Length: 86
Image (tube, rainbow, N blue to C red):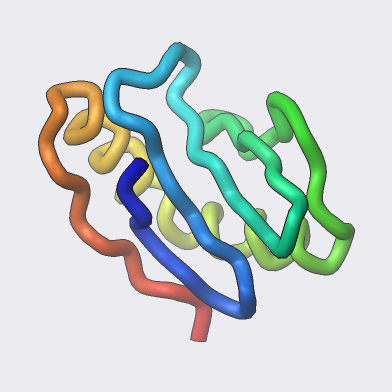
């Protein structure tokens, strides 16, 4: 599963040929959450509230890029890195 970003201990990944709807996986320590790109809502899992706030802030800034990366991984192409939060 390609890593597309990493910041503040949070690792963002996407699976090749993953199920719909378009989403990304975020790991923080031993916690994991799957977040829909369209509305940035958690599909499954959870992370601590502070980490979730950082994830939503980052995803809001990069929503268009996340959709582009989703298309890459659906075609089994390596995604590009997305800038982390500063």
